[in-house]
Length: 345
Image 1 (cartoon, rainbow, N blue to C red):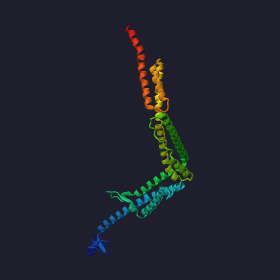
Image 2 (image 1 turned 90 degrees about the vertical axis):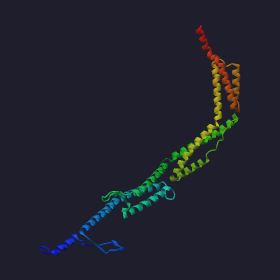
Image 3 (image 1 turned 120 degrees about the vertical axis):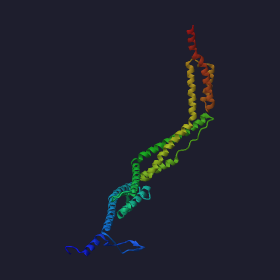
Image 4 (image 1 turned 180 degrees about the vertical axis):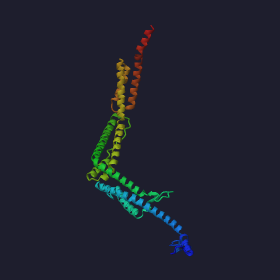
């Protein structure tokens, strides 16, 4: 107002610039009672405004980072979820009928709720970085999103397994029929061999042979029915179980046949050993030796008669072997001894 301010005006100006001349509404409390206002200087106001600005900037940057990261990823995962649901529906994987169908319902609800929460409260999905003072220091919290993505991936693999079953179900069913048929034939052969062993081998422990795997055949019929009705989600776990059990059944049938025919194998081995020693004796010109002929006839009658006592037959073969070995020792060493004596002469 004047070319040169007066002393009072200078004092007023000084108070405005340096004193507590700024009055602001206050929410601070004193002894539990709220203050209606507070007075502060321009320096304090600037400091407070800078702090408020930093806080506001941190909130804005954090919210923007969350909004930029999560909603778009959730939308992409929701699109993948929609494709997976359509594929699951096509192979019969539905809620209430298959666990994967229930999982898809839960994932759908989770993604819907997650997107709404991210949009309405982004700071709830922000993880501040420890020790960082920069605005927006931290990263979005994607734990719930990652968990939903993993769950959807597990369901997708399950659906792919069901699709694989649909594509090669007939081939796997044919293989199962073949394996069970071979198991049945092997068990039938084992039962027939057991009767033969009981008739031809005396004093022998012959294990019993079980009947055909009726339960597996019934489940195979159920699997074929699932395929005919396109119930792939039911067929998938049943085929996996049947394949393992059918292979086990065939192995058990083969082991049963081996155990039952073991006495016949022992008899065949004794027959082969007896004939091999007789041929060896014949090559040395001792086939007509009375002792060897007698012991051979005894062993042969035991091995070629029914029922055959394997223990007695084995002893008879051993006696023939011993007699043959004793008879062959002089013949085998004779020419060598004569050569040595001729050399000494």
